[in-house]
Length: 530
Image (tube, rainbow, N blue to C red; front, side, top):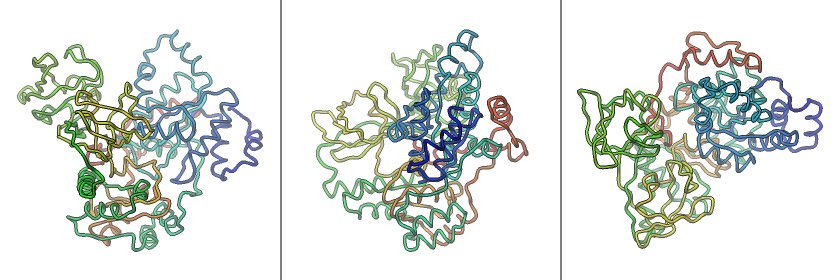
């Protein structure tokens, strides 16, 4: 432990923390187990708690590092909690050799010394998959990290990839502090609706939302959501979240919003046409089937593959498909053909992403977001930007961090851009705004559930509006669909009473290795921002 309990109590005695925040800080600093958890409901002040924990850890000589399952969450953790952060995926890739037991004895000793006083904080823990959590636990065990803190909310959306390890670790006995004093909502009816949703009381939540649940014709769901956002004063739009359950509805909302803003002169001036890449949302098994590729698709390689003559970052267009031999024919960089069997190389291990191609117009006033990281330009996936001007075949952006960036058609990052007025629910998790306007399909079999409702309305401080195609059917569907994912460990009765103390953490790792969840949904169906 970094501190004794009495010392923590003394340090926090006169501070502005809630009871739940104090208990979380105390657990992080005093518990003897290597891995501990913080279950913090939406709006309970997890970031404020982490700022205080970081300060106390650093005062005792610890280096605090942050990890998060998305670039936007990592950026928020660093900016708001003061914890230097990166994505969980990047950390795992850099330490893949550690997770797979490839360290030499000398390398192991050196890395253990380097991490001897490191505390890892994993934010948005509910979005980490079983595979990611398993590798993180392996790495923390091999390197003998003194502290790993898993912070999240098991009531919010789970990982798009297989598993719900954050909830399972809590159920298995991980020491966990609970923060349940909600402070975000300034409107008391909205706060009551959030609390009712947490309790599974959908009827009471709908009663508290009242007239903010609007029913429209099914073919007008996107239009009605867009119209409500457009009806806000321009200054209020900047602090209003416009959410959609799926990419299809999100794209419709963005198109409607942009058409109106062009008509109003908000989006104006010369146009800049670019070719953008849209992820097909395939899982790794789907990427492994040649039949899922079409001529004109683009395959981006995340790692170098000498057998194919490709480097990390290469994006090759699909020229054709050899269905008889389950092979994809790619256009090589030198103009020749590259024959690739995705079932044998790269696809199954997540070494590629598959895109379809479409054209996109950019004009002054457009709001966009990046859909991949670009370290050279200092851009991160999901980071927002506004088009300031278009001239001389050049487009100028103002990035949300205030930087000004010029690009031409030769910049490959321009292929990884999307409209940003509306977001999917998954992408919005972790953000806070004054007003939320969310579209919900009454009977979507995968996306309409209590977890989605909770994330949608808990993002708002003052007002949350739901737009649906059938209010009565939506309420009935939500009462029946909790959104809880059943993992195979639960189905088989395994995974109970697993200790994750410093001495027995390996049991937790082994337990997660024995089973994976029953089904992995297509990412595009789940609405993840890719």
